[in-house]
Image 1 (cartoon, rainbow over the protein chains, first blue to last red):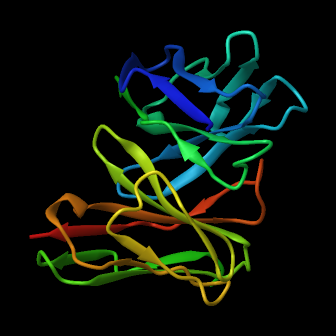
Image 2 (image 1 turned 120 degrees about the horizontal axis):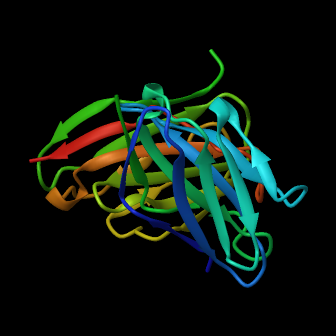
Length: 115
Length: 113
């Protein structure tokens, strides 16, 4: 079964610093991968998704993620953090073969941005 | 309005009572999902549905029942609520499997006392 592991339940950065949120997937076949963001008291919204067309994926709000098959990783980055980036971020996986109906999430990483 | 809506937004119920959480989407998406969100656990899949009258279990289905008689509705029922089911519940839908985006409702905060 596909799964994702997010390293670090809390990440704290200063405004203007690099944001790096880590996600590793578990699958013998490269799956479809997603990053979602959740602002307080809201549902989740899509930041970006990997679809095998390109290993570097650009999303909304200046975020991007790089798919690395050799490391089974799909880490999320942003060059310069903004206060408005404070939220919880979830990595998710959907299979390309059996089980592709499911969308399974990691445990989330809460990002704090300090002024 | 187009979108996915959950009702109620907040619910307090007593242990042992049956409670149903509603989810409605206007896009005619094939796939619908129910998740629960708990501190330290992220989002865990309860049930999902690939089409009307087709449902399947997720990671944590015990104590929950779903039905999908119409494409646009996917209610989640707690047959006999327990305190461990206190959580925030999210419904989501997506057009297809694989790499298609899922759209989420605003969530239902359920407290079982």
